Image 1 (tube, rainbow, N blue to C red):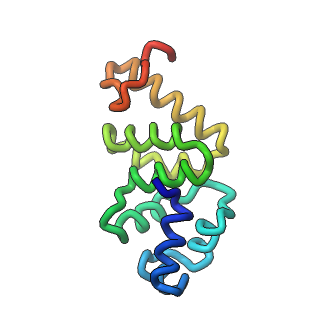
Image 2: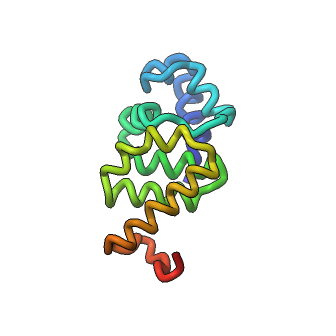
Length: 134
């Protein structure tokens, strides 16, 4: 799977204009450039990711989240978040708050959500991960 920067670069190459792609998505040219050139200092905001997902038929918000994880070098954690988003839609509402955290705070929040889900008797992750080791 392509990461988000690669995917968007292909779209820019097709259009031959970063401005056109940014306008079609509904984000600023600067935001698009920062994603493509991998200049992200923090995680993209949920509205940005949602606009990208909405713009392309082959993308969903969880897919875009996994693509961001591949871009930031933490595919496993972001894949976990994507699975959680599909299983528990309320997580999407918390995303904006989570994106303002540092990477360490974000990982701790993800680990805590998984811990609480297990405590509450939630279903195992679709990937079949071993849930016996908290």
